[in-house]
Length: 85
Image 1 (spheres, one colour):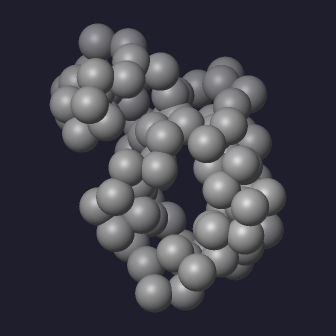
Image 2 (cartoon, rainbow, N blue to C red):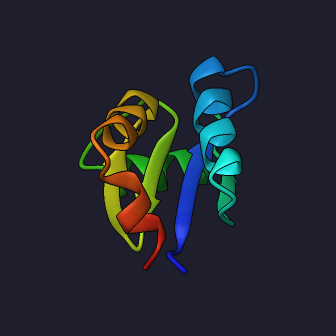
């Protein structure tokens, strides 16, 4: 199974949508709490090539992007193959 990491913060509707999609897919994921100014947020920023928003999603170390990117990947049929690894 793929290793999924998602950087989130409280009260973020995009984080909630991304988490809900991953939960519906029935996959395990590691949620990393990354509020502004935190070490986790700096890590997410560095790993994502400078993106400062949350969520930031990684599958097997590959940067997927944010919520909209995750949803688009799912609509295009590209998410399930990544999750099945």
